[in-house]
Image (cartoon, helix red, strand yellow):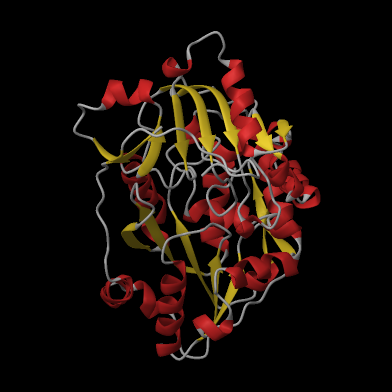
Length: 409
């Protein structure tokens, strides 16, 4: 295996706090916050670059307006669909009051604020609905399970995230139609009915770093988010090649992607009604571990063909099933062939490729589907790309090595 470095277009904001402060000072959105108002700041469950700095800065700006901020978990059914579980996710990101200056108010209670289409109910977090103003913070990026001009971002957090389990279930029960059509339609209703002050939209580059921050006011929120999604798609990373025999993923998890591994990277969606991508074409995927930040939620394990007993032992089936039953994505909960060690997983994957000579097998190994700057590739792939200026050699070829426990080194 050869370790290489990929080169991606990577604009980056270096001083997040100063940049966001300047942005908020320049925009009129913050002026809508009045002294004494209770301001709900909605934060999701994703591992977003600089989220602690962004949330803390927004809290301080609200406090400067003499208003009273508090954080609301906006994450649908995540955290086991419990108030305690959702609060814990925010605490794990160091978003507790001791870090941000604002308390967390977590509840799964919601209220119906109206209907859309054929009397489809729209639900909204009760505590957020009782606030005088609401600020929504989220990353804008391509969704893992559908393609449209509005995917993951502020509108999705306003509808699925702040809809809690009840609202998320309504949207997901309508399948891809719900994701593509109900999120924008329900989002418009939320903007009409709820006191949305503004959104703080973040876009990340291919290295998982903050590249863009925009303040989205209610009157231009939808169009601005569409534009940010186009930019986010341009900045997405990718695997070094499209034709891969074996992809080894060191870790999957909810802090990496809503589906554990990003389908935009691995080329597998497995959702009824959504066409499968043509590229990349990966014959077998082996995933080795589950991140601690996932709290046992292995949503997306069904994308893999092979996994390890160590990963399976970490799965919290209740949380995983709750997430995927709500999302109506049952295929993503299917546990693949489970091997006792990483070494045995690799041996089985190589066996799948027989009688192809081992020096012709096309293997890629990545940390996860977010961190794709440095990856390992087999000699067969390196020979193909070594003269391409987008790739730089980090370490020359070496044999796969496993320790006495069968762990890849």
